[in-house]
Image (cartoon, rainbow, N blue to C red):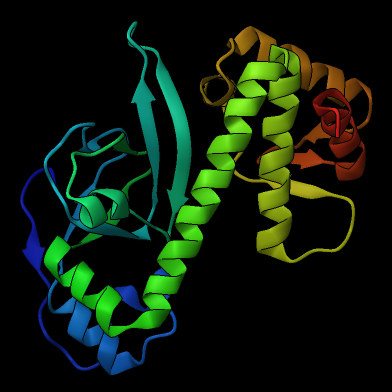
Length: 244
């Protein structure tokens, strides 16, 4: 990790890891055992956790804040791959195959990050099958998401890729909130440049698509959120151009 780290002090009961999705099936005393092996550090928004090709092998848990997984083109253009919020984790690829980091990670918000060394992560996979299963499911989701992204980049026009990205974020929101209606609330409001970097287009294209969707009544911008008023209609638009 960048900068100084601290070792967690052993105290009764888990302190930081009890909200981590990957570890939620563990008993309190099992979480304590893992915490005793960890280091933690805070990162200011805009600072780097690690760079692409870094030799670190730790697995990281986001306790507070949000980080962004990014890569860069040959021209230096930033390409956003994913955002990880509180309760999420990252870094398991390098921990599993002992290869350099495949992407860089930046703190989007002030964040508290806990690092579990590679050796102890592998031991946890062997000791706790529930962790191993959750890691496998996450890797499967990553493969599926990458496949879908490659297909979209190869077959869709820029405006359709923006629509597809909004649909993806809408689905994630509906899944997290467990809502059954036809709306989705995306918070915080995605920045035009962030959407553009995810789908390899320009901020101007993103602004134009958002404006068109607003005029059609599919999208509404409030003070602090982006509301998809008709998720089904947006899904129909995306599936139509995908040929589904």
